[in-house]
Length: 184
Image 1 (cartoon, helix red, strand yellow):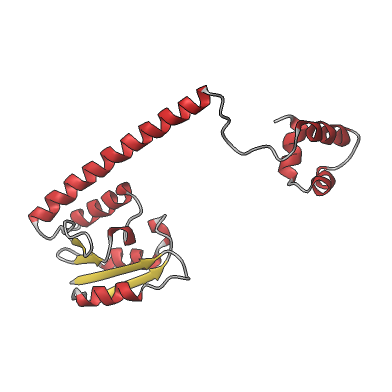
Image 2: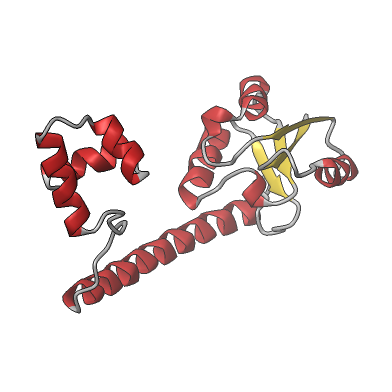
């Protein structure tokens, strides 16, 4: 059986165009949902689909990013489909069709290329961060309070002011006041 899967990330978006494309691709049943692609555990319709598929079934999506958010996520899903002897087709990425040997080969190659590219990007980012740190660039959030405000807060707290009162007075969170008191 051919199953379609349509997903959009937010409630402001509409998956109807995906559903129409999946119908044109002869999907007998279509699962659709409005959910972030960040975590497959938070996609109830996708999980329902994965529970009912069996050997010989095929899952069809309009685009790969509707199924997986990262190469690793895609590889995990593809691995699970392969173990269950199920096929996978992406309508937009015609090379991604595991129902034939050529598509399986290309999917494996593209997965390897994506992994390689991700590692190169990570290396370049790390090199850039190290160069920036060597030039004195500070990373992380900037302090909301200047040094004199932090000293004054520590003094007021030592004199008995509560952290909650100090947070209101300086219009910051209690955690910010706590860090000022502890010198972090």
